[in-house]
Length: 371
Image (tube, rainbow, N blue to C red; front, top):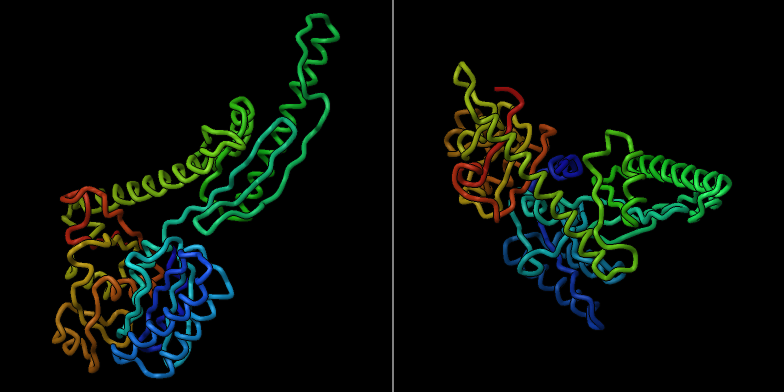
Protein backbone atom coordinates (compact mmCIF):
# COMPACT_ATOMS: atom_id res chain seq x y z
CA UNK A 1 0.00 0.00 0.00
CA UNK A 2 1.29 3.42 -0.98
CA UNK A 3 1.16 5.50 2.20
CA UNK A 4 1.74 8.94 0.68
CA UNK A 5 -1.89 10.03 1.21
CA UNK A 6 -1.36 9.76 4.99
CA UNK A 7 1.23 12.56 5.12
CA UNK A 8 -1.27 15.19 6.39
CA UNK A 9 -1.72 13.11 9.55
CA UNK A 10 1.91 13.56 10.55
CA UNK A 11 2.28 17.24 9.74
CA UNK A 12 0.41 18.16 12.93
CA UNK A 13 0.86 16.94 16.50
CA UNK A 14 -1.62 14.69 18.31
CA UNK A 15 -3.63 13.53 20.04
CA UNK A 16 -5.92 12.26 17.27
CA UNK A 17 -9.42 10.89 16.94
CA UNK A 18 -9.61 7.88 14.63
CA UNK A 19 -13.18 6.85 13.86
CA UNK A 20 -14.00 3.86 11.65
CA UNK A 21 -17.61 4.13 10.47
CA UNK A 22 -19.52 1.13 9.15
CA UNK A 23 -21.98 2.17 6.41
CA UNK A 24 -22.53 -1.29 4.92
CA UNK A 25 -26.06 -1.63 6.29
CA UNK A 26 -28.52 -0.15 3.80
CA UNK A 27 -32.14 0.05 4.93
CA UNK A 28 -34.99 2.52 5.30
CA UNK A 29 -33.69 3.66 8.68
CA UNK A 30 -30.05 4.05 7.59
CA UNK A 31 -30.09 7.82 8.09
CA UNK A 32 -31.44 7.42 11.63
CA UNK A 33 -28.86 4.74 12.41
CA UNK A 34 -26.05 7.06 11.27
CA UNK A 35 -27.37 9.75 13.61
CA UNK A 36 -27.20 7.27 16.48
CA UNK A 37 -23.69 6.20 15.39
CA UNK A 38 -22.56 9.85 15.26
CA UNK A 39 -23.68 10.48 18.83
CA UNK A 40 -22.18 7.19 20.04
CA UNK A 41 -18.80 8.01 18.47
CA UNK A 42 -18.83 11.46 20.01
CA UNK A 43 -19.61 10.06 23.46
CA UNK A 44 -16.90 7.43 23.15
CA UNK A 45 -14.25 9.98 22.17
CA UNK A 46 -15.30 12.22 25.07
CA UNK A 47 -15.03 9.27 27.43
CA UNK A 48 -11.45 8.71 26.24
CA UNK A 49 -10.55 12.36 26.83
CA UNK A 50 -11.08 14.04 23.45
CA UNK A 51 -11.80 17.78 23.39
CA UNK A 52 -15.33 18.97 22.77
CA UNK A 53 -14.55 20.60 19.39
CA UNK A 54 -13.12 17.38 17.97
CA UNK A 55 -16.06 15.33 19.26
CA UNK A 56 -18.46 17.76 17.62
CA UNK A 57 -16.53 17.72 14.31
CA UNK A 58 -16.62 13.93 14.22
CA UNK A 59 -20.35 13.80 15.00
CA UNK A 60 -21.12 16.26 12.20
CA UNK A 61 -18.93 14.36 9.72
CA UNK A 62 -20.60 11.03 10.52
CA UNK A 63 -24.06 12.57 10.16
CA UNK A 64 -23.06 13.98 6.74
CA UNK A 65 -22.54 10.43 5.49
CA UNK A 66 -26.34 10.21 5.28
CA UNK A 67 -26.19 12.26 2.08
CA UNK A 68 -23.44 10.25 0.36
CA UNK A 69 -24.19 6.50 0.29
CA UNK A 70 -20.99 4.53 0.96
CA UNK A 71 -20.91 0.80 0.15
CA UNK A 72 -18.67 -0.15 3.07
CA UNK A 73 -17.57 2.71 5.28
CA UNK A 74 -15.22 5.59 5.90
CA UNK A 75 -12.56 6.47 8.44
CA UNK A 76 -12.30 9.94 9.96
CA UNK A 77 -9.04 11.30 11.37
CA UNK A 78 -9.63 14.47 13.39
CA UNK A 79 -7.86 16.80 15.81
CA UNK A 80 -8.50 20.26 17.28
CA UNK A 81 -12.04 20.41 15.93
CA UNK A 82 -11.14 19.52 12.32
CA UNK A 83 -11.47 16.34 10.26
CA UNK A 84 -8.10 16.24 8.49
CA UNK A 85 -8.54 13.08 6.40
CA UNK A 86 -11.51 10.82 5.61
CA UNK A 87 -10.58 7.99 3.19
CA UNK A 88 -13.09 5.43 1.96
CA UNK A 89 -12.96 1.85 3.18
CA UNK A 90 -12.92 -1.07 0.75
CA UNK A 91 -14.69 -3.35 3.25
CA UNK A 92 -16.67 -2.78 6.45
CA UNK A 93 -14.75 -2.53 9.74
CA UNK A 94 -14.98 -5.75 11.73
CA UNK A 95 -17.18 -5.39 14.77
CA UNK A 96 -18.90 -2.28 13.45
CA UNK A 97 -18.10 1.40 14.01
CA UNK A 98 -15.48 2.32 16.59
CA UNK A 99 -13.56 5.37 17.84
CA UNK A 100 -10.07 5.77 19.34
CA UNK A 101 -8.42 8.81 20.95
CA UNK A 102 -4.64 8.38 21.03
CA UNK A 103 -1.32 10.22 20.56
CA UNK A 104 -1.08 8.83 17.01
CA UNK A 105 -3.76 8.26 14.37
CA UNK A 106 -4.95 4.64 14.41
CA UNK A 107 -3.97 3.88 10.80
CA UNK A 108 -2.97 0.19 10.96
CA UNK A 109 -6.52 -1.10 10.26
CA UNK A 110 -6.42 0.75 6.93
CA UNK A 111 -4.00 -1.86 5.60
CA UNK A 112 -6.79 -4.43 5.83
CA UNK A 113 -9.80 -2.20 5.19
CA UNK A 114 -8.47 -0.11 2.31
CA UNK A 115 -5.03 -1.41 1.36
CA UNK A 116 -5.11 -4.29 -1.09
CA UNK A 117 -8.10 -3.52 -3.29
CA UNK A 118 -7.07 -4.27 -6.88
CA UNK A 119 -8.80 -2.27 -9.59
CA UNK A 120 -9.81 -4.40 -12.58
CA UNK A 121 -10.83 -3.43 -16.09
CA UNK A 122 -13.45 -5.94 -17.17
CA UNK A 123 -13.46 -6.06 -20.98
CA UNK A 124 -16.63 -7.48 -22.55
CA UNK A 125 -15.26 -8.60 -25.92
CA UNK A 126 -17.07 -9.65 -29.09
CA UNK A 127 -16.24 -9.59 -32.79
CA UNK A 128 -17.48 -6.04 -33.25
CA UNK A 129 -15.68 -4.39 -30.35
CA UNK A 130 -15.68 -4.23 -26.57
CA UNK A 131 -17.14 -2.44 -23.57
CA UNK A 132 -14.83 -1.63 -20.65
CA UNK A 133 -15.90 -1.47 -17.02
CA UNK A 134 -13.85 -0.54 -13.95
CA UNK A 135 -14.39 -2.81 -10.95
CA UNK A 136 -13.22 -2.50 -7.35
CA UNK A 137 -14.74 -3.19 -3.95
CA UNK A 138 -16.33 0.28 -4.15
CA UNK A 139 -18.44 -0.73 -7.15
CA UNK A 140 -18.28 -0.46 -10.91
CA UNK A 141 -18.27 2.29 -13.49
CA UNK A 142 -18.20 2.56 -17.27
CA UNK A 143 -14.70 2.96 -18.72
CA UNK A 144 -15.39 3.28 -22.43
CA UNK A 145 -16.34 1.41 -25.60
CA UNK A 146 -14.41 0.27 -28.65
CA UNK A 147 -16.26 -0.15 -31.96
CA UNK A 148 -14.37 -2.04 -34.65
CA UNK A 149 -15.15 -2.84 -38.27
CA UNK A 150 -18.65 -4.26 -38.72
CA UNK A 151 -18.33 -5.97 -42.15
CA UNK A 152 -17.66 -8.71 -42.93
CA UNK A 153 -18.06 -10.57 -39.62
CA UNK A 154 -19.67 -13.97 -40.21
CA UNK A 155 -17.95 -16.84 -42.01
CA UNK A 156 -19.54 -19.06 -44.65
CA UNK A 157 -19.33 -22.81 -45.12
CA UNK A 158 -18.64 -22.72 -48.88
CA UNK A 159 -15.50 -23.84 -50.66
CA UNK A 160 -15.26 -21.90 -53.94
CA UNK A 161 -12.72 -19.16 -54.49
CA UNK A 162 -15.06 -16.22 -53.83
CA UNK A 163 -16.27 -17.69 -50.56
CA UNK A 164 -12.71 -18.46 -49.45
CA UNK A 165 -11.83 -14.85 -50.29
CA UNK A 166 -14.78 -13.69 -48.17
CA UNK A 167 -13.62 -15.86 -45.27
CA UNK A 168 -10.17 -14.26 -45.53
CA UNK A 169 -11.82 -10.85 -45.23
CA UNK A 170 -13.66 -12.11 -42.14
CA UNK A 171 -10.38 -13.22 -40.60
CA UNK A 172 -8.85 -9.82 -41.38
CA UNK A 173 -11.82 -8.06 -39.78
CA UNK A 174 -11.51 -10.14 -36.62
CA UNK A 175 -7.78 -9.45 -36.41
CA UNK A 176 -8.31 -5.72 -36.97
CA UNK A 177 -10.96 -5.51 -34.26
CA UNK A 178 -8.86 -7.54 -31.80
CA UNK A 179 -5.94 -5.15 -32.36
CA UNK A 180 -8.20 -2.13 -31.85
CA UNK A 181 -9.53 -3.58 -28.59
CA UNK A 182 -6.03 -4.43 -27.34
CA UNK A 183 -4.77 -0.91 -28.11
CA UNK A 184 -7.73 0.71 -26.35
CA UNK A 185 -7.39 -1.63 -23.37
CA UNK A 186 -3.70 -0.72 -23.05
CA UNK A 187 -4.54 3.01 -23.07
CA UNK A 188 -7.33 2.48 -20.53
CA UNK A 189 -4.92 0.64 -18.21
CA UNK A 190 -2.39 3.49 -18.41
CA UNK A 191 -5.05 6.10 -17.66
CA UNK A 192 -6.60 4.21 -14.73
CA UNK A 193 -3.47 2.42 -13.45
CA UNK A 194 -5.60 -0.72 -13.18
CA UNK A 195 -4.02 -3.77 -11.54
CA UNK A 196 -5.92 -6.36 -13.60
CA UNK A 197 -7.37 -6.82 -17.07
CA UNK A 198 -10.20 -9.38 -17.13
CA UNK A 199 -11.35 -10.56 -20.56
CA UNK A 200 -14.96 -11.72 -20.96
CA UNK A 201 -16.29 -13.28 -24.17
CA UNK A 202 -15.88 -16.25 -26.49
CA UNK A 203 -12.63 -18.17 -26.06
CA UNK A 204 -11.24 -17.29 -29.51
CA UNK A 205 -12.02 -13.59 -29.14
CA UNK A 206 -10.42 -13.45 -25.69
CA UNK A 207 -7.32 -15.20 -27.03
CA UNK A 208 -6.92 -12.88 -30.01
CA UNK A 209 -7.16 -9.78 -27.83
CA UNK A 210 -4.78 -11.23 -25.25
CA UNK A 211 -2.15 -12.06 -27.89
CA UNK A 212 -2.17 -8.46 -29.12
CA UNK A 213 -1.69 -6.79 -25.75
CA UNK A 214 1.79 -5.34 -25.05
CA UNK A 215 4.15 -7.59 -23.09
CA UNK A 216 4.15 -5.23 -20.11
CA UNK A 217 0.51 -6.21 -19.47
CA UNK A 218 0.73 -9.98 -19.93
CA UNK A 219 1.07 -10.73 -16.20
CA UNK A 220 -2.00 -8.57 -15.45
CA UNK A 221 -4.39 -10.41 -17.78
CA UNK A 222 -6.97 -12.96 -16.64
CA UNK A 223 -9.94 -14.55 -18.38
CA UNK A 224 -13.39 -15.05 -16.87
CA UNK A 225 -14.85 -18.51 -17.31
CA UNK A 226 -18.45 -17.30 -17.50
CA UNK A 227 -19.64 -14.88 -20.15
CA UNK A 228 -21.76 -11.75 -20.32
CA UNK A 229 -25.15 -12.24 -18.75
CA UNK A 230 -24.09 -15.11 -16.53
CA UNK A 231 -24.97 -14.71 -12.88
CA UNK A 232 -21.62 -16.35 -12.08
CA UNK A 233 -19.55 -13.68 -13.85
CA UNK A 234 -19.40 -11.48 -10.74
CA UNK A 235 -18.05 -14.46 -8.79
CA UNK A 236 -15.36 -14.95 -11.44
CA UNK A 237 -14.30 -11.31 -11.16
CA UNK A 238 -14.12 -11.39 -7.35
CA UNK A 239 -12.21 -14.68 -7.40
CA UNK A 240 -9.64 -13.23 -9.82
CA UNK A 241 -9.27 -10.10 -7.67
CA UNK A 242 -8.79 -12.22 -4.52
CA UNK A 243 -6.20 -14.42 -6.24
CA UNK A 244 -4.30 -11.30 -7.29
CA UNK A 245 -4.13 -10.10 -3.68
CA UNK A 246 -2.96 -13.53 -2.48
CA UNK A 247 -0.23 -13.66 -5.14
CA UNK A 248 0.93 -10.15 -4.23
CA UNK A 249 1.21 -11.08 -0.53
CA UNK A 250 3.08 -14.29 -1.37
CA UNK A 251 5.49 -12.43 -3.65
CA UNK A 252 6.31 -9.87 -0.96
CA UNK A 253 6.73 -12.61 1.65
CA UNK A 254 9.16 -14.38 -0.68
CA UNK A 255 11.10 -11.12 -1.03
CA UNK A 256 11.18 -10.74 2.75
CA UNK A 257 12.38 -14.34 3.25
CA UNK A 258 15.13 -13.91 0.69
CA UNK A 259 16.27 -10.59 2.18
CA UNK A 260 16.25 -12.07 5.69
CA UNK A 261 19.01 -14.53 4.74
CA UNK A 262 22.38 -13.01 5.80
CA UNK A 263 24.96 -12.25 3.13
CA UNK A 264 28.63 -13.25 3.28
CA UNK A 265 29.30 -10.59 5.90
CA UNK A 266 26.37 -11.64 8.07
CA UNK A 267 24.16 -8.68 7.17
CA UNK A 268 20.46 -9.09 6.43
CA UNK A 269 18.23 -7.05 4.15
CA UNK A 270 15.17 -7.63 6.31
CA UNK A 271 14.37 -7.45 10.02
CA UNK A 272 11.59 -8.65 12.30
CA UNK A 273 10.51 -8.03 15.86
CA UNK A 274 9.84 -4.69 17.55
CA UNK A 275 13.38 -3.89 18.72
CA UNK A 276 14.99 -4.44 15.30
CA UNK A 277 12.23 -2.54 13.53
CA UNK A 278 12.51 0.44 15.88
CA UNK A 279 16.25 0.62 15.22
CA UNK A 280 15.72 0.41 11.45
CA UNK A 281 13.04 3.12 11.59
CA UNK A 282 15.36 5.45 13.52
CA UNK A 283 18.01 4.91 10.83
CA UNK A 284 15.53 5.61 7.99
CA UNK A 285 16.09 2.18 6.47
CA UNK A 286 12.46 1.06 6.04
CA UNK A 287 11.47 0.17 2.48
CA UNK A 288 8.35 -1.92 3.09
CA UNK A 289 6.59 -2.79 6.34
CA UNK A 290 4.88 -6.16 6.66
CA UNK A 291 2.16 -6.31 9.31
CA UNK A 292 0.12 -9.32 10.32
CA UNK A 293 -3.08 -7.89 11.89
CA UNK A 294 -3.34 -10.59 14.55
CA UNK A 295 0.38 -10.62 15.33
CA UNK A 296 1.42 -10.45 18.98
CA UNK A 297 3.78 -7.51 18.42
CA UNK A 298 1.32 -5.27 16.55
CA UNK A 299 -0.25 -3.94 19.73
CA UNK A 300 2.93 -3.85 21.81
CA UNK A 301 3.63 -0.54 23.48
CA UNK A 302 6.55 1.59 22.29
CA UNK A 303 7.46 5.18 23.07
CA UNK A 304 7.38 8.03 20.59
CA UNK A 305 8.56 11.61 20.43
CA UNK A 306 7.32 14.49 18.33
CA UNK A 307 9.24 13.43 15.20
CA UNK A 308 8.70 10.22 13.23
CA UNK A 309 12.23 8.93 13.85
CA UNK A 310 11.92 9.48 17.59
CA UNK A 311 10.71 6.10 18.82
CA UNK A 312 12.05 3.54 21.24
CA UNK A 313 11.14 0.34 22.99
CA UNK A 314 11.68 1.97 26.40
CA UNK A 315 11.00 5.53 27.50
CA UNK A 316 14.49 5.94 28.89
CA UNK A 317 15.94 5.38 25.40
CA UNK A 318 14.19 8.50 24.13
CA UNK A 319 15.64 10.55 26.96
CA UNK A 320 19.08 9.24 26.02
CA UNK A 321 18.42 10.38 22.45
CA UNK A 322 17.63 13.87 23.74
CA UNK A 323 13.83 13.77 23.42
CA UNK A 324 12.24 15.53 26.38
CA UNK A 325 8.59 14.73 25.63
CA UNK A 326 7.32 11.22 24.96
CA UNK A 327 4.08 9.26 24.75
CA UNK A 328 3.17 5.56 24.61
CA UNK A 329 1.81 4.24 21.31
CA UNK A 330 1.01 0.98 19.57
CA UNK A 331 4.01 -0.50 17.74
CA UNK A 332 2.17 -0.88 14.41
CA UNK A 333 0.94 2.73 14.35
CA UNK A 334 4.33 4.11 15.45
CA UNK A 335 6.15 2.16 12.75
CA UNK A 336 3.62 3.21 10.14
CA UNK A 337 4.25 6.86 11.04
CA UNK A 338 7.95 6.28 10.39
CA UNK A 339 7.16 4.44 7.14
CA UNK A 340 5.01 7.32 5.88
CA UNK A 341 7.67 9.91 6.64
CA UNK A 342 10.35 7.75 4.98
CA UNK A 343 8.21 7.24 1.85
CA UNK A 344 8.10 3.51 2.52
CA UNK A 345 5.20 1.21 1.67
CA UNK A 346 3.26 -1.24 3.83
CA UNK A 347 1.44 -4.51 3.35
CA UNK A 348 -1.02 -6.42 5.50
CA UNK A 349 -0.34 -10.15 5.65
CA UNK A 350 -3.42 -12.32 5.38
CA UNK A 351 -4.26 -13.64 8.84
CA UNK A 352 -4.82 -17.03 7.19
CA UNK A 353 -1.17 -17.17 6.07
CA UNK A 354 0.86 -19.96 7.69
CA UNK A 355 2.49 -19.10 10.99
CA UNK A 356 6.05 -19.98 11.98
CA UNK A 357 9.18 -19.18 10.04
CA UNK A 358 7.26 -18.22 6.88
CA UNK A 359 6.06 -14.90 8.34
CA UNK A 360 7.79 -12.22 10.43
CA UNK A 361 8.19 -13.09 14.09
CA UNK A 362 5.44 -11.47 16.15
CA UNK A 363 3.68 -10.34 12.98
CA UNK A 364 5.92 -7.32 12.28
CA UNK A 365 8.74 -7.24 9.75
CA UNK A 366 10.32 -5.04 7.12
CA UNK A 367 12.39 -5.17 3.98
CA UNK A 368 15.21 -2.63 4.32
CA UNK A 369 16.62 -0.06 1.90
CA UNK A 370 20.12 -1.30 2.58
CA UNK A 371 21.73 -4.04 4.64
